[in-house]
Amino acid sequence: ALLKGLRLAWEDRYPKIEVNIDSQIAVRLIQGPCTNNQALHFIIKECQDLLLNRTWEIFFNHCYREANRVADYMTNIGVWQSPLLLFLTPLPFQLARSILFEDVSGVLWPRITLT
Image 1: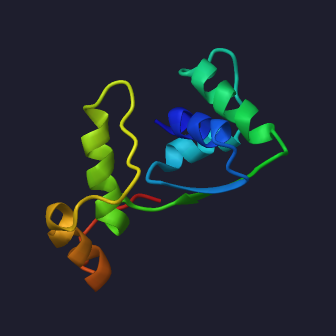
Image 2 (image 1 turned 45 degrees about the vertical axis):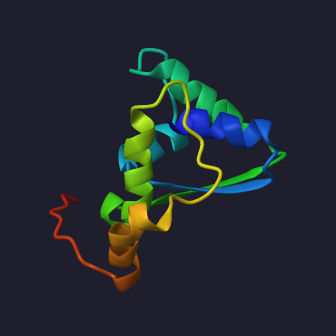
């Protein structure tokens, strides 16, 4: 999904993007060294090649999926679409109202994290 998003942003010539991702492992893999025997080597390498292009700026932020449940909801819808589901506008308000209300009102969801 990250690679598809980066490709889409590159093809549409976005000069600056911010990637909020809920996987710290994915951020570490993309920003760290890549070895040939690493799982998903080709995907990681292609992401890194896109990042090295100096004609755009990319910023990665880790956020827990509970911090933006609307984005998580949209991602879960997109997982079942093939080959790509692109949201050109936000979800209809009625569909995402309760989730959006939780995001806006700061509803807390317990989470155990390991450091």
